[in-house]
Length: 170
Image (cartoon, rainbow, N blue to C red; front, side, top):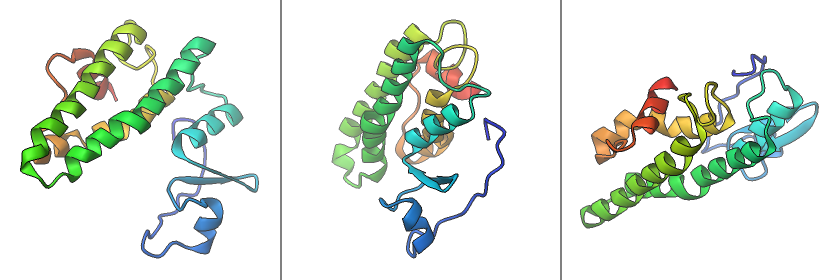
């Protein structure tokens, strides 16, 4: 959508995955992309592939150091933030809630300090004035923020104003 590309969106029945889908995604995970007869899977890899094949508008920083940092933050989202968030969401033991929520909240504070305070400059997005792949990797979790808050008491901490501004901008 950010690239303005035409595509066919196919919903997947996770209880009855089609052969066509499994041929495109051997892991059986979404999303999967078939482009020019080739299959690409894993969200971050699909995003970078599309950014390279269709370079306008660019969604990764031009600067190679910032491009590496964009990859670092997408990795952080996938490997650290997401597991901690889902630990809170899936937890059924009230005695563990505070500890799990504190860990997820500290991940958000880390993002505020190490990403937004150091990388975004005057812009509301991860790397400044325009949204990019890092923003798009993180946003689906924040799109569900009202549900986290309502059901699990998780919210963007008050001491994370840039993260809150980013979520609003997205």
